[in-house]
Image 1: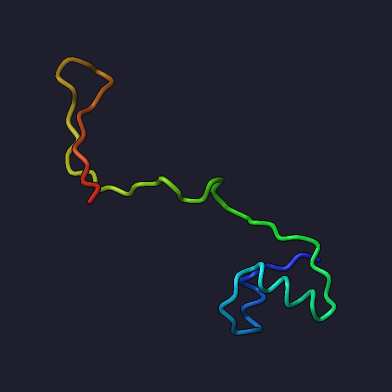
Image 2: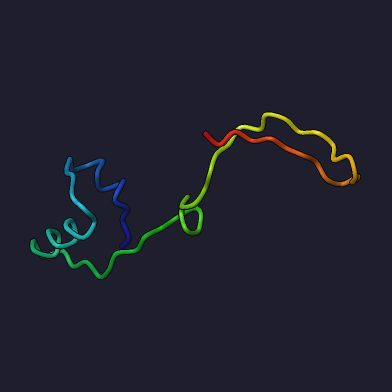
Amino acid sequence: MKISQSWLKQYIDVDLTPEEIAKILTSIGLEVEGLEKIETIKGGLEGVVVGEVLTCEKHPDADKLSITTVNVG
């Protein structure tokens, strides 16, 4: 049976890593076959930058291009 760390934390209040939780469960006789990291976005959000588009104007020399000013902080 697979359980998520967030589901488990609904029933126990601990600040342990998944590895530490697995070790404790194994020590009380509950076999932990393995740990699996699940991400809704492959690679998580590593490298994602959020920005605000300030301006967006047509390129003077191209029909399909725009010149955009973005504030990224």
